[in-house]
Length: 126
Image (cartoon, rainbow, N blue to C red; front, side, top):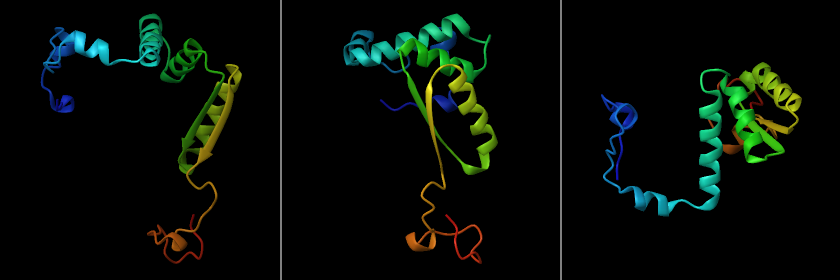
């Protein structure tokens, strides 16, 4: 099955309940593991309870709570450090143990890895 949902003009799957894949429902149901079903149930709970009433960050926290997660983490671009700090603070306030890693973690030099630098004149660029 090859999908091209980004270029679909109608999204009849959403608007009219049309199964455009041709894959029977029973085949799909048999393919899911218990863990996948649990993920879907938590996602449907959050969507059905909070959709359009809270922001995506809050939805993520609600999903993690529904899944019983205690620890969360994120990776982020160093250019979004202020936003990452805000997100980390929010999840900690929600009671999660929270970890983060930025793209420059370990500070390995691009030159040593044969990578193109943004500023070639710099001696060190992580």
